[in-house]
Amino acid sequence: MDSRSQRISILSVLLLCLAGLRPAQAQTDSTPPTLRLLYTSSVQGKLHDCGCKHHPLGGLARRAALLDDLSTDASKTIVFDGGNLLPSPRSAENGHAADFASLSAEMGYDVVGVGAREIAQGLPDDLGPARESGLRFVSANLDGAAIEPFAILRRGAQRVALTSVVSPASAAEARDGVAAGDPATVLARLLPQMREKADLVVLSCAMNLEDTEALLRALPDEARPDLAIVSEGGTHLATSRVVASVPVVAANSMGKYLGQVDFHRGSDGGWQASSTLHPLELSRPEDAEIAAAVDRIGIQ
Image 1 (cartoon, one colour):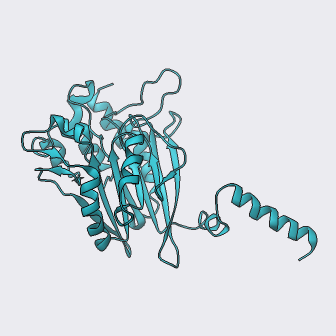
Image 2 (cartoon, rainbow, N blue to C red):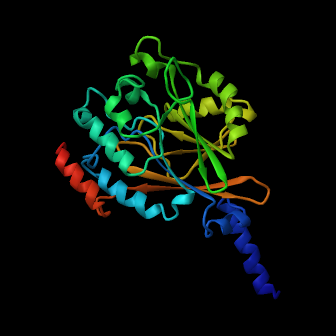
Image 3 (spheres, rainbow, N blue to C red):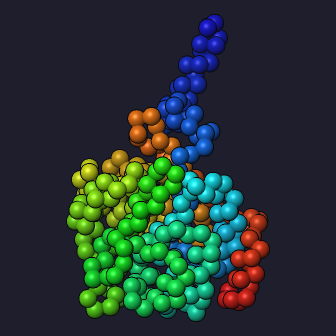
């Protein structure tokens, strides 16, 4: 190698280091992922854009079109909502909660975490129309609720566990006999069980970013997930941050963003994750069938 080529090679490695990437990781970004996770959270039943004055984003039909575009290999793709997918019973959107749930199921959501809005809607007993949509709800720390603590999905040779936790305060509107256990205590017991059944564990936290980070730090090493999603509040993260060795992502709120995490599995069995946040600009195309269904519902 001549001196000029050697200088270019050294400079390339330095640039990669400054960007926080190892050369091997940079190469995986151009290769198909082992698994792709597409996720939303805190959508709050929004059918249309957020109505924001300065930069409106969102819309169910736009999200449906983008989900279809990004699900290029269904055998490697999981669609997950981390929680607060449904509207609040006190919101203007509440009248179409059942329709919204049915359209979300039609769009291919595999699993939905439970947030404060699902509890307010009556989960697990009175969500009849949403349950009938075929959506699969999970929550690790709802005591007294007839709901799965986690879901195991198989994509090719990989098994993926998805679960969610809510803060105890979120269960204040739950029916008698249902309460939220301490998330750290529950996950310390449950997550190692998930590890025995899955190659990758994804946790959604129906709490704000600060509380999510505190929870991850409180967990023992063996009870930490491979990815954590913040599914409460207005947080959205353009790139993941790492807390207690766990990548943390967020795509809140009101359906303005769609999150994407591509996982590459190395020869040592470890995972590398790269995240992308897609803002749903009004210029994005819409899925024609979902757009027609939204128009029939007629709620702005």
